[in-house]
Image 1 (cartoon, helix red, strand yellow):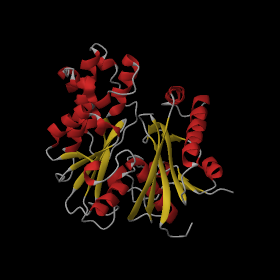
Image 2 (cartoon, rainbow, N blue to C red):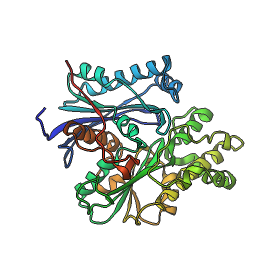
Image 3 (tube, rainbow, N blue to C red):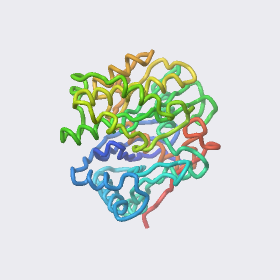
Image 4 (spheres, one colour):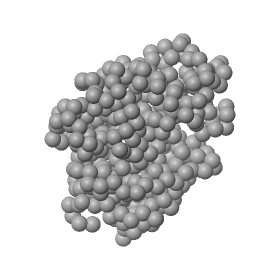
Amino acid sequence: MNRGGPWWVAGTMSGTSLDGVDAALLQTDGEAILAFGAGGYRPYTGAERAVLRAALGLWEGPEVAAAAELVTRAHAELLAGMEADLVGFHGQTLAHEPKGRGTLQAGDGAALAEALGRPVAWDFRSADVAMGGEGAPLAPFYHFALAKHLGATAPLAVLNLGGIGNLTWVDPAAARPEEPGALLAFDTGPANAPIDDLMAARRGAPCDRGGALAASGEVDAAVLDAFLAHRYFSRMPPKSLDRGDFSLAGAVAHLADADATATLTACAAAAVATGLELLPAPPERLLVTGGGRHNATLMAMIAAGAGCPVAPVEAVGLDGDLLEAQAFAYLAARVARGLPTSCPATTGVAAAIGGGTLSRPA
């Protein structure tokens, strides 16, 4: 690795949807995006998803150890075929309690560095949480770089629809992401996770493909109103969520499959609309990434409540399946250079801070 970059970095992401590991190559010096490279995907099997689900919400014990071993091995398998100077390894979030026990991402970056024979940046969230931050979301600094790369001149927003939704507002007029007013970011609320969990429990399916089932159902207004009364929505950002912070399965237990799915989809969209109301200024457009952008029903509901044009990131030439992995490639380069990876406006941390640990093979 040359000391200051630029580097080809392989970033990875294993999100709260528990579907698998995404990897993407990005050429960057940790400030500018210079080129996009190839991507890869390693799905989790049903048995592997069961291992991960068994460890969700736990902080220690054999289930956590088994999840960490699985996550490290799966990443090593995917990354073995990718040439890179540096790896950004997010790991798998099992528990997130920033004002309590902290944050836990399963996976051993030092072991991954040994397996791959190249440096690995990992444990991106712990330093932020230790300084009073939420530890999430972390992609906003990359969203800032993307706005610059796209040549944006007006504020825009990026919405990631993973298991949890998160929203970033970017003012591209700022010179650096840590500048006051450059960014605002926070988790909007549950997105794909409750829908996927319901589909798995009731239909044995990984998701509501295209939002087809939701499109055939009716939204239960009482459930939606109770959802929006949750105290989380009255908190001002920055703020973040754990996958288990909302328990929606019981709220829709009395509903038929289609109505339950429609209601959970409406909840996800309403959470986004509520989040958009908290932005410093209306964005010129809302660009959507993550698996939820493939859900036509969810996208239509979001567009109906957004107050600005809504489009998947592919509309501006980006790849929404790889964007989160690219974000951790970008952050890995910033870790290697000692640059900030979060700031008060993205996680509520006391000051701009560079998180992450850099492990090198022996």
